[in-house]
Image (cartoon, rainbow, N blue to C red; front, side, top):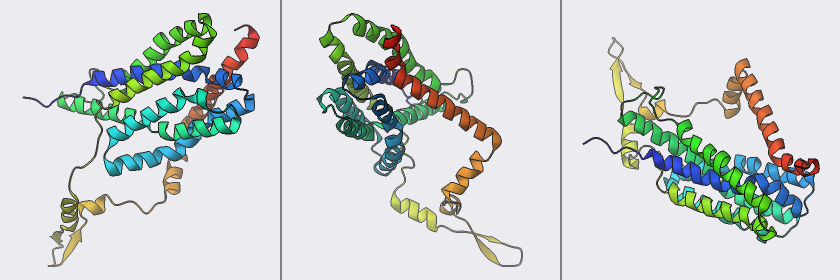
Amino acid sequence: MGPALPALWQCKLYYFTTSMGLACLLPFLPLIYARYGLTRAHIGAMGAIRPLVGALANPLWAFLCDRSRAHNVIHCACLLAQAIGYGSLQRARRTPAALFTWVATTEAFASCTTSLGDAATGFMCGKWNAANRIADGDVDAASYGRQRLWGAVSWGFVAAPTMGIIMSYSSETVKRNAPFVGYFFFVVVGACLSWLLKHDVGDQKTATDAAKEGEELQMMGDGEGRVSRIASANDLHAPTVKSMRAQLWEVVSQMDVAFRFFGFFVSGASMAITDLFLFLWLPGKSG
């Protein structure tokens, strides 16, 4: 009997439901903030919360996951906190400081959910390909993009037109509550599905085994009767003496890499500006 294959439909369904929840609320957040009395400068600051908080919190969550090996527990808990935080945003005080604190706290938990889902999907695709003896680059290989595509399908072909109809033709009460209800429901469903994802928890060796391996020495002769120590496996995986800054500079100092990073920077900035201010601009143009 062959090895049990990861159920990749779980990845597809995870992306479908979580993206559905995000699409119910995120496009309408600038309008909601404006309705709460925030200025456009405040709305821009609110849009900067997610990347800034994520840059600080995501490495901490990654460290906690690796140390505890409780990837599924942390993933599910953070998705639930994300659903509760944004789903109850209406309960926050309608002041810039209160809303900023509320969203920043929510994003501190939400920051790791995307990377954990992506990492699990990549790991499951790799296991599926290995079990089926398929190279990662083959046409028939499972890939992250093919799983992630279902998130785009739910966002663009299901949630966007559905929410557009609801926000255009429903009563004021429904318009006010539908984005939050939809967000909460589908992100909670995604949290339940996150339990079905498989994470790479790394080497399962005990601390005793690792210490024993590190103490093992290989000796070799140099032809004159002398012996010398060969680096152990632990030595081979020891961190380099180069600082992170030096290693980063080695990468970005390459011209093609620098141009690519610049392209990502420009496209990211344009997407952020569009996402934040397009819906604020359209009403004045009869949109």
